[in-house]
Length: 314
Image 1 (cartoon, one colour):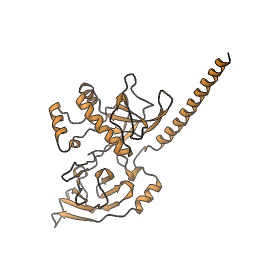
Image 2: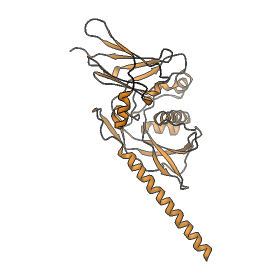
Image 3: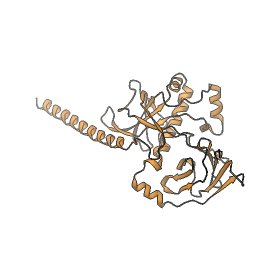
Image 4: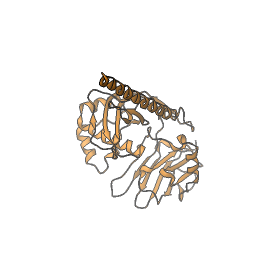
């Protein structure tokens, strides 16, 4: 009889501990959700994504922390270019497989509890439904996407994920799906150009935080104190109304484009870097064709070259 009462008390204590842990995690998630912007301060248009869970992956970080990735779909996420198996193999055999872009939205991490009652972290990744169907039918595309997806999460949140993921058989998601907000305006492509393996930022980065729009005040202060890199801007042709502006920005302390964020408006260029190594905010005396702007980063010379087409005078 006493053993039975003891077991009952232990079960109630365990239930109470789990409930308390869940309440604390729910509170942390609520605080994270409050940080999500309802609109961008610079007026950049965005669209709202309502993720529909399809499958869930389990993996761990390099430090052993348990991670769940909820792979979701939504109609308003762009569909990538359709490739055949042979075309995908050509991409994989190329010097830079990352040139093939797969639009995806990576949401904020949210704290959850796994089935054993232990704490874990979950990420929601959203793709187009047609691409999701293709992944279900084609193991090659699925493996390729999951690799790119893990790299995206690692780059965005500065973590390292193991690649021995497991797809859960009887569970589509861990935690509750939250709406995501993505930019509807493309960002310029930044490419590393050297003989090694180039790193690229996506043409469109809906999932990547814009430092100008979302950081808190102390982050803004750090950016203002960051040194301005040396730069030159020339126009082509040199006389009269230019067709192009070309900016050369010297970044000797930058190793890879993954630490750069480049934002080009109609008459503005803003460059920010991870850890506030540099900060550059340039007003340009011409209206630019923002959708056609592009950039290349030479890892040998450490120079970022930005090419910006200029709108006609008319």
